[in-house]
Image (cartoon, rainbow, N blue to C red; front, side, top):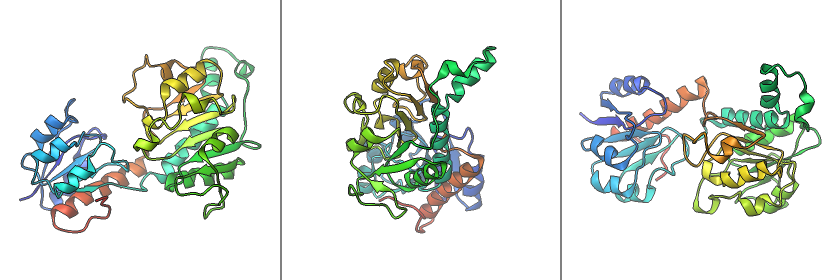
Length: 319
């Protein structure tokens, strides 16, 4: 009987996956040990497995070299930067993910962060709880109308953010690797260069994948060309932004504020500069989560693994 193993999970338990896998007539095992994401532990847990489900496990070339029998790795998410896809392909291992599951909830979260920062909601809330009734302490307070919202990366989530920002009254411009400057997207959003987007935008929201060319896409040098009252939002990947440089800009009042959901090292150290910086709204990689999106994510991820193990074509396979 084939076996599928959950090597690590972001959901606390694997009961949902167990029920689906066992109903398909497949043996199920699950681990979620503190070091379960490390290649050494992954190899140990998968020595006799046909398939694996992972959230953040480090699936390096070392893992595939040790597991020639592994048929599939199914990721509980869209980004696959924790998996060496080239090594997996050479090994004959399918790499599956779950695109588009979080389009609505992540775009909701990005917009919520932007408005929370513009309106200083968390800062005013903290004052009220301390007995201070004076919103003027936290001026300036902003609004959507009359401001420009820059979307970096026009995939499904970026497009949804652009539509929602326009609906709130922002003017919207966009950058995407496939969007030629001065051309428009199918939804009527104008593409521009990345540098021009940084110069013109009052809110800059990142929705691009993490790749060598997008690592620290926002950095100390180009933060300097942004408006001093601009807002930075990141719900994509932590390393797309140099968060230390962002924190420094916030400490020096060179930006209005920032709303950050993803970090280069997670969980983020409370002593890190971004956690100490003023005018920030920080969330713990929560943008992808709603009760509805989590069910869809887990179901589709598990079904991908089941399909490959049983010799069927999965819904989503990147290689």
